[in-house]
Image 1 (cartoon, one colour):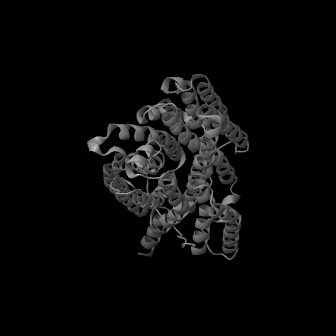
Image 2: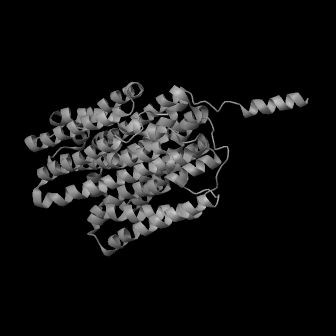
Image 3: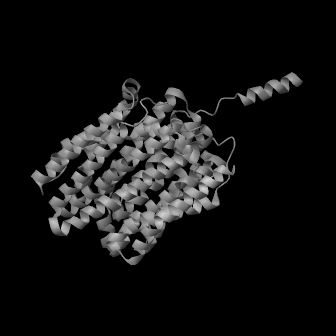
Length: 476
């Protein structure tokens, strides 16, 4: 009897973690695609939304920024809650909330109602998305994990480009007279399918030693991100009022207080929201640093090209979206080859990707300089395709590097930190490169403003290439 109990305990202790099958992986990747698509899907729909709801430019920026801010601020908390209460449970709850808030966006009767619904949609995304990477980390291993992470990176990059393309197609299609509302309503049937599949195919995982929520750390992280991102995203449209400067001045103090509180909690044996010890992992620290300029350039470019093609070159929403189709197609196929290339050449693949992306961005700047205003799919095709190949050799690989040494017990925290860095940088890209572009138009004109902004992005690509040289040569 004693032997039976002992052997039962031993078997339980050595039981394999739940496995994530093919259908389960597809389902969590669907959950990863939805929030990223929705960050970009409104770019080409904004002019139509503004006309239909009589919204000012500042309010339209809140439609984008409100989603991005709520998303970025709550991501780490979403990862911690998944570790605590179960990642499948949070994934299902977040996806259901995403569907309901998408419906609210699609039915919004006024601009401010849409802004409120977008903030709620961002919060739902923050509950759902960290569970994707955390589930992959906890329920896969070895080559299966490498393949799953490669597919996650491919899905993330493709979603960011496809969102803009899909937005243009849906607005132009005007399905059943819904116009711009279809860019949100399309999420509802997708969410219903996702919920059905998740209930059947996604295993439940959670931390073996769940860590309680860090209240002070959560509040201070939220304050830090808000004091930085809110003035940068709203400042130009609002005319840079006093509150924007006061907020920016408060940012370093809020960030310093957050670091001090987290460090003290770590030293006292309590569990901080973002454990400083996590940043002792070289792969995570250096990977996060590289994500910042990459994501700033990515989102800034997507916003700028949407405005330039529609308002400057006179393209419709479909043409403006489809101009980036070569980037999306090439990104997808090249990213699938990423794991094999990394296995053979190590992380120098990332450096090569930055060099290739630089060539693509330079070709697009040249096309804007030579062909304006006749700028569209044909003129942008060579540069967009080459840039897409370069991006595909960077983003999926860097995601793998960041999480390669994170313990499974902290998979939710690690995923939340990485996605928060990415999402905050995406918001910064629209705020910085977008503001630069829009500020240059009155003095330089649309063409020169676009070329100048692309050259600034080129400098950012060069920075990512230099930073990639400091990445570990191999991925654990």
